[in-house]
Amino acid sequence: MDEAVRAAVGQGVVREGNPVVGLLDVRGIRATADALRAAFPREGTLHTFAVKAAPLVPVLRLLADEGIGCEVASPGELALARTAGVPPDRTVLDSPAKTVAELREALALGIAVNADSREELARLDRLFPASPAASPLGIRVNPQVGSGTIGALSTATETSKFGVALRDEGAREWLVRAFVERPWLTRLHAHVGSQGCPPALLADGVRAVYELAEDINRAAGEQRVRTMDIGGGLPVNFASDAVTPTFAEYARLLTADAPGLFDGRYGLVTEFGRSLLAKNGAVLARVEYTKTAGGRRIAVTHAGAQVATRTVFAPESWPLRVRAYDAQGRPKTGAPVPQTVAGPCCFAGDLVAVDRPLPPLEPGDHVALLDTGAYYFSNHFAYNSLPRPGVYGYASAEGHTRFATVRDPQSLGELVAESGAAHLAGLSALR
Ligand SMILES: *Cc1c(COP(=O)(O)O)cnc(C)c1O
Image (cartoon, rainbow, N blue to C red):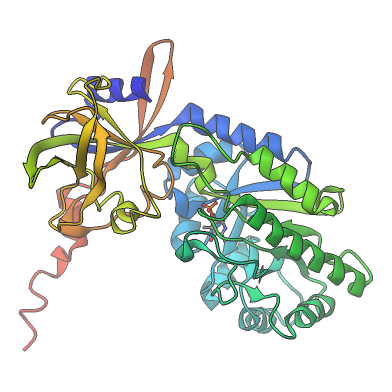
């Protein structure tokens, strides 16, 4: 990281005219992909990447090179996956709001689809009255195992909007019948929450859905459910450089909880997002000014709510580590003093860290927001018409760091066009 920051400053990747950038560690991403594959070594496993965590074509391409497909949840995400060259048989479509057109497209392409609700299954019945498409089809189940520490990211609560709620009255019987009556339904899907959900909670959910699969197969008199899609959701440690929990630990937990899942009868699909990318990325921003107010030291930087949206609006749930670098991109060494790291947005709450002990920052220095490789580059917030930052991948070897553009920074021309420039006089013409 330190080497990459030094090189990003030295090579002008981050500079006065490009004061905030996203950085992605290409070797780190490859190593994380290796760890994922090693944790689930059995044949018949398809790893997909939840595109929403980093909707960037070169990232999807890099992961595809590593044998990892895409989990998509919108026509836009599907278009990105297809542009990256991810084949249909390595793509999974999950979304709670798939339109008829989206379903038709996915099934025409042969992409796996997990129906999110009874209504969606009825829609599939109507769309394909005779026989189903080539797509593997399944149902998403909410095992209702409870909430993690972040409510907005807990998908398996009693009243979650996702999937068919397994423990609701009559739901289990309905699900068994749905599969028994439809030989083309061959998958069960669960994605139990996300950051803030401990692995044991995720494993509880997977076990509940595995037990449902066994019930269905017994009732069908054959192996009707052939593939278990266990979703993603492995949390990430934002407090230090340690990778914990690991994919291997999670795989061991799943094996202990639901050994039958790994005895060779079931194909497996995973959909990890954050755990593949978060620790392999950082936001790097220039410090523009420093000031004090009411005794508080404040560094005004170019990274705020536009790029660290969740951290700014929900700081308790999304605290980030901040590292201080000087104007040359070298780690700052002064004795830490509490400083508030602010962003460029025009509202008072635009702070990425409050009273954080850091070496004293000065104008021209840099701050890095660590562990921001997942979700931070996708959750851009267009406040103050601040442009989407550029994202650059890097690889350091033998003292040299090379960069490759992942996404150009949004230009002012693009920003103006996106803001309705083509319709300049539209309102004035209405009387
Ligand atoms: C968001 C999402 C994922 C990925 O979640 P992470 O917490 O980033 O691993 C996987 N599957 C589905 C259905 C999702 O909505």
